[in-house]
Amino acid sequence: MSVDLSTKYLGFSLANPIVVAACTLSQKVDNVRRLEAAGASAVVLYSLFEEQITHEQVELARVHEFGTDSFAEALTYFPEADDYQVGPESYLRHIEQVKQAVRIPIIASLNGVSRGGWIRYARLMQDAGADALELNVYFIAADCDMTGAEVEQQYLELVQAVAESVSIPLAVKIGAQFSSPGNMAKRLVEAGAKGLVLFNRFLQPDINLEALQVCPHLELSTPFESLLPLRWIAILRGRVDCSLALTSGVHTPQELIKGLLVGADVTMIASVLYRKGPGEIVRLLDGLRQWMIDNEYESVEQMKGSMSQCKCPDPAAFERGNYMKALVSYTGQPI
Image 1 (tube, rainbow, N blue to C red):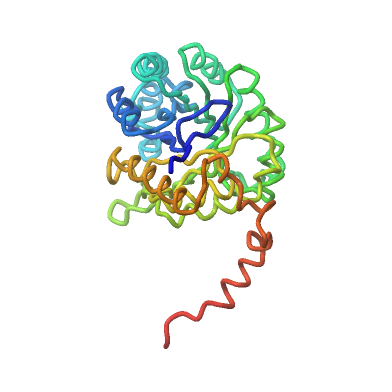
Image 2 (image 1 turned 90 degrees about the vertical axis):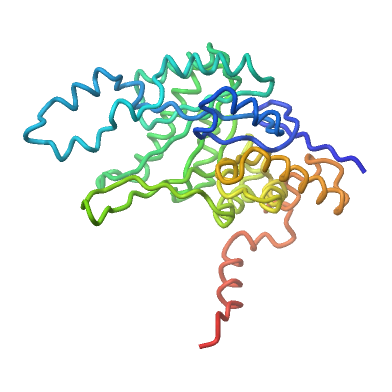
């Protein structure tokens, strides 16, 4: 029995639902070629950050030199110039080189939180050949005087500004820390998003006890992290008019299959590639194909959303019903 793994995302017809998430693996053209050869249907390039655009190396050098006597301890919070892997112009050239090297869609990634001149790089990415753009809004509302409504408005204004600057499809990658993620999703689509990527992983800083310093900390994802976007994609499927991507926690065919069943158009992977290499794409697709054969699904399109909240026989399972059942049924280990 043959099955059709093709899917649609941001208006593109993709060979399968595996897309490589924004990560450093795409910094080399040869790596993107390997990912395509392994079966990736599209690649989101590593992110170009707002800070990289607005603070070029000259500006960074000036910041490091200013006040070195009286504010030396504070300067460590500014990235060293060498920490920025590439500058804006190099990123644009990289898009051109990757587009010449592969046939799959290439999605540029722009990471920022505020409106400003850096947004013009969205158009430059488009002009460099990017097929679509992913806006990764990584904003920590650390101002205790800032209201939730103000945070949401900042997101919406940013998305609208970027969407108005390009004609290629715009996907927006967000976190789940909204009071009403469903309502926010609808408003993001109204602001111009053609796709939503759920969810951003807000990486938490750590404390170095020897140096008594705040330091960056990164943990690769685990399958458990797929459960949160799984729930919200199930809720959003059929309620928002846009593409949906599940990211974080897809490590085995099981997470991939569940994502499609609740309504994801694609699942994005990165951590599993760091751990095991591009060959894992083959394993994921083989597992999906075999499961579809065993369960008599003819196509991914037939699968998508068949277990979303709109179609689930027990819609409460995605709301408080799951919470109550989980707590009541759990007995733990004997004491």
